[in-house]
Length: 171
Image (tube, rainbow, N blue to C red; front, side):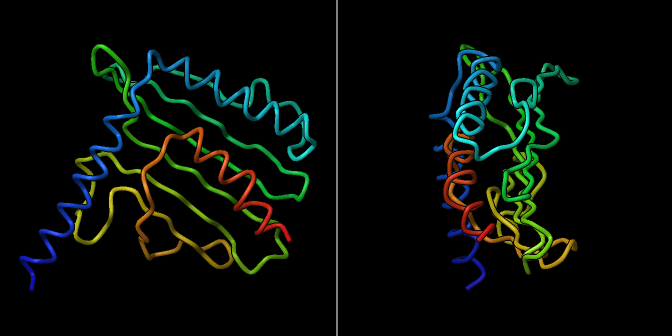
């Protein structure tokens, strides 16, 4: 049984890696522009508060890794979103290495946080923690369960959070 579980976990990890290999970017700035444009449209529709043109920053980290960082975007519902996305150069393109999306619904909700994570390859045990997973927590504590989540382009992830998940949480 243990061997079968290991095989299934490895297959899930291989599928995750295959999905990531299809998400190649010309440059880290390309994803930055796409995410800023998307958030600006959300603001135009009056679903997001305040200026979002500088909500996401780009910085170079050690080892040539670039990180897109959005410390906070507030929805009109009072929900709040934070996210970081790390990209690494894999010539001839850039590749998504890790991301963390944290959605904090309004305080009156029973759910305190929804977190969606893609862990770097070397930081996880594929049998216990799927590389891409989500957590749901009550209150402000951290959810312990690592529920498998499909790997997808961060722009699509942002769309699902803004137009599907957040409206459901905010009701």
